[in-house]
Image 1 (tube, rainbow, N blue to C red):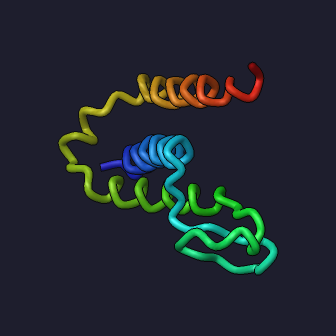
Image 2: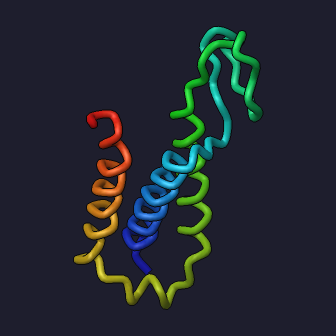
Length: 104
């Protein structure tokens, strides 16, 4: 079993998880710059605006790591690395469609 297959699964799952966390606003935690603290719950407006990127990234890393370790070997052996570009390409298109609202 190559480690490359697990890394590819990690990358693809993390990419999917990040896009879903971004689209549905599911950060694992939020960072408030004014307080210089991380919080798992939404804080009052007096705490300033939260930075969600760290939470989205942590969500993607945890989801990608967990599923890369759980995927059975027989599925990894059937995985076609030549088609691995399809998922990131589709997710980029989905993110662009979501962000088009800023330009209309």
